[in-house]
Image (cartoon, rainbow, N blue to C red; front, side):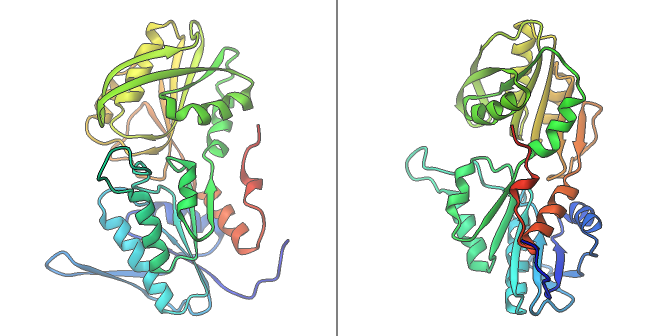
Length: 315
């Protein structure tokens, strides 16, 4: 239900996501608020909001990819807004870092995503907005509302342009089966699964394909592409199994280590990502889809008390 809301919306950005925040503010129609980050010689820093936020609905935009400075800067900006008497503070986190640590998979390890959720609440965030969490159940780690946007809203229109009559959706590992199934359901396409076994983090021991991909245009879908080891190995295996073409759609381009080199040398025809994390360098194989308009619409719907789910693509 729309309301005539007398409060002001103010958008601010952390240092790391300034490029994306500017795109969001352009689509929203409100200029970004001014932020100053004072640096000390020992490496400490102190961010400040350079305009009043008293009684305002404040949206602070910052992805929390490495280094951890980005997370801490976001926490300090939230705290600054709280102490300046903002009415409502939404942490807009396009890429929610530390999400891969979402359970105790071995003894004596931290559940970092739960810890970060606690930190955001303690800092003063009254709402969180993010996109394609590594595990959807992380929403339950928060004691404040979470608006979880879906990159399929951006990826599906791009996939439609492929105009493939032999499309098959593939999950690069067992953890991505649910995501792949949703895309397959939308396109009324078949599915394949690349089942992998790891020796340790970022190192694959073996992989096999479940499903028939011969002569098919395969689209791999995932939330994160980090070192690109899994994705490029899956692409190579799919081609060996007779796939006509292999593309990948991954929301968050972490792309660390030898990722760019692996992508360039892989049989992937295209890697499509969102701009939740800035690319370290350009590549002819990588296509970036802007997410600023989607976040701007979501921010507007939060402010006007409208549904966020209307922004999703339904199968």
